[in-house]
Image (cartoon, rainbow over all chains, first blue to last red):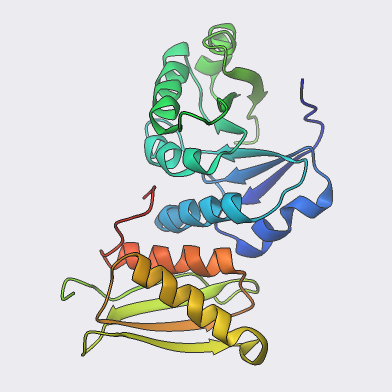
Length: 152
Length: 95
């Protein structure tokens, strides 16, 4: 089991923070394509995170990408970042098991055959998500953690 | 490559590069580069931009790049983003 005591959120469109994120000793780096990125910069952030994952050495840090919600651009995010082999996808606004199943399908479609399976961390951010938390947490073997998104 | 639109990507913050692309009069690749580290890394920055554009099969393009100390991966990402916004990126996963 991986330790996730310290999670460093990094805005996906900030090149300076992306290139230095690995030097602070966090257990995991979360490359944020969601709230930290302005809507008109989502495309550029996606490309920047992909290139960072491809070339920057993050040492022992777990590499997690927070994608946009499934009713926004989650599918595009997954198609873009999965080939660059993050360790996990952080799924925001996970409200029900079907959300997890959908994301698993999109991940499988983007994964290469020789690629280790990408894990999923479900972020519970709504009352519906809390009510369905057990169903979300047990929806698929790729779910390795759930997190409470209480800030917004 | 007359379908290429003018587009911009990146910022002028430290460790970033602002890339502006537009159609060029002739069929080549014209790169105008400004950098704080032109003396040390100008050739490498120029090469990354040019290689990325060639890889995408784009010609007839004018590129203005204002660098603030970006790494190669950032230069490549910003160039790709500008090309995508200009409607001429085809060979990269994503977007």
